[in-house]
Length: 143
Ligand code: 5GP
Ligand code: ZN
Image (cartoon, rainbow, N blue to C red; front, side, top):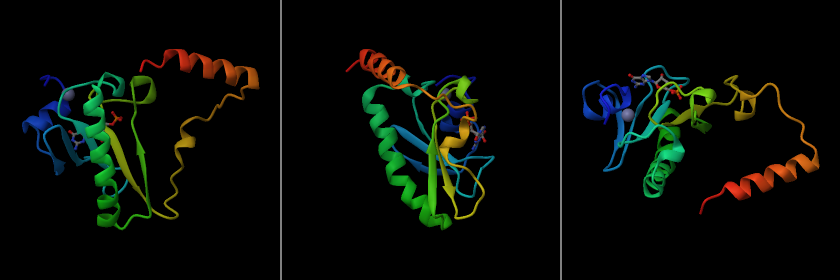
């Protein structure tokens, strides 16, 4: 818990929220400024800023909750699909520095784009560049 984190304060009950789900490790609540009806945020109860800060067990708990909640949310709001995403760091648009998974219900013809719409200026890598990227990621994997 950090006093200046709005999501920690929500978990603590200092700031009210519409709680969708709660267990020992995970908390889910309706986004106050939803992109679509049913837009839900799923967060670890412990304060961690980014996905990579989470201990392994906690990331499993977080994703298990996303897995369980997604079909329930789709059913509840009669959605055709969902977009699920994390703004992982300020450069990706993260405004609240407490890792959170967005579950955004989607509807046929809703006019929204796919995740691919986030990057208007895409690279066009050569095979060599793709290979170099693959090697770099392989070397960086720490497990
Ligand atoms: P981010 O841009 O950090 O990925 O998303 C933060 C999300 O948190 C936004 O969608 C915003 O609407 C939501 N949010 C910010 N403050 C509050 C709050 O006090 N209560 C709730 N329920 N959602 C919040
Ligand atoms: Zn926090």
